[in-house]
Image (cartoon, rainbow, N blue to C red; front, side, top):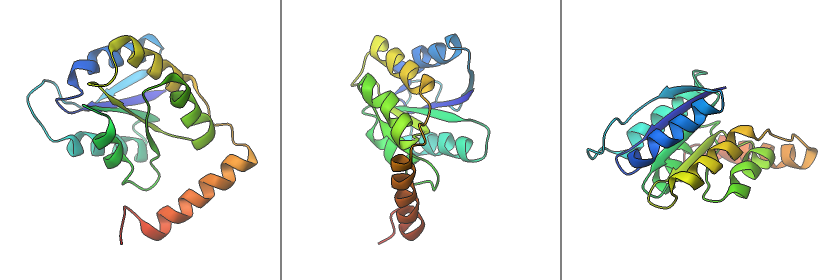
Length: 153
């Protein structure tokens, strides 16, 4: 699997561990920055990761910021991206299995290295179940997305 990894300065302290875990699991990493703890704007990096999934350069993405919230919000502005902020292992696999989440958002100021590695393992090993109830719900999500786009009012 090709996995895009992107972060802002707040997520940077966790990036090396996340990237190493992805590689350890046998996946390819598409590193989309940032490369230091110098302050940058999280939307630039989360958007790059979402675009990589949508244009086929990556199968899934992991975005990191201080809380995971901002990066997840940005990723979810893209049609076809389903990003989940996960800080527990159950949510990291269930998000894929039930909701076909393709972007994992993590907060480097919320989780430590050991938990982040468990979350990455759970996210990347999970597969969408495709059961009728999940497909029906995702179709409703797609209809909402088609109607409202990236949050038009």
